[in-house]
Amino acid sequence: MRLRLGLPKGSLQKATFDLLARAGYRVSVDSRSYYPTIDDAEIEPVLMRAQEIPRYVGAGALDAGLSGLDWIVETDADVVEVCDLVYSKASRLPARWVLAVAQDSEMKSPKELGGKRIATEVVKVTKKYLAEKGIEAEVEFSWGATEVKVPDLVDAIVELTETGASLAANNLRILDTVLETNTKLIASREAWADSRKRQKIETLSILVQGALMGAEKVGLKMNVARANLDKVMKLLPALRQPTISPLSNEDWVAIETVLDERESRDLIPALHQAGAEGIVEYPLNKVIP
Image (cartoon, rainbow, N blue to C red; front, side, top):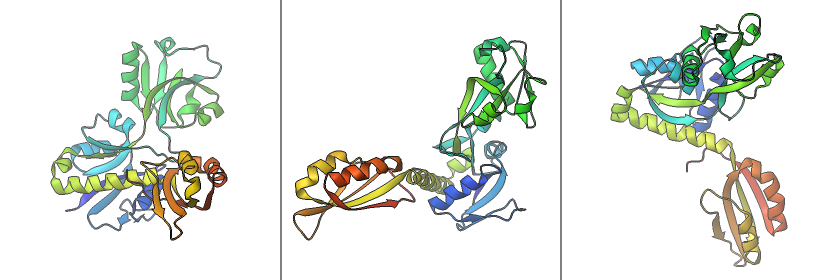
């Protein structure tokens, strides 16, 4: 059994390879090749544009793949959405397809786009959005450099953004969010019905989700005198409950917990003040809830 897995080529490629590495899969590819090597004999990866992956998974040419919700919707792909993987080339936040106009445009609402022209890479997504809003506008496909087309060539664009910085730099103003999107692990219905392939896909899902969660968390270990245990415990978050272990000195215990990395900066001084000693922070590859 070999699982044919579509991986996104281009802007999302490095972030995807890094995620797979954290999950325990070593993937490498020659700059001119579309067939990466992976240290799992049961997986056959193929590099292709994220826009195409849902279509090929839906058709059964690929057993599974990583692509965005936006391209699943845009291609009308009939796939099994196995899990959400919220990561991108620049952050661990969902991306948005937004409706934008020139900064000095008089338009303040999407309703004002009736009869206007909109350029975008996601034509079907945009038309669906306009239909839901009751707006009749012309939507044309954009091959790229979409931001420069406003206002001389089109009246508005629908463009992908994570922070909005690129739009602002091109003197564009967001009117509305058309679609919030993130990467998903998807499977073909044929592969999902095959018990061996489904088990392989579910294993991949568990590991990559664990890798994403692990990237945002750290482990903390410390020693605490029993006299200070209540004070320290009140400060500690955990996925369930911190682990408390006795030490050879009966008056002391060891505590271990997992927390969001962003919390540790403020928490560690507070723990030290409350009586914790020998505090060690360490990174985590994977966290499986």
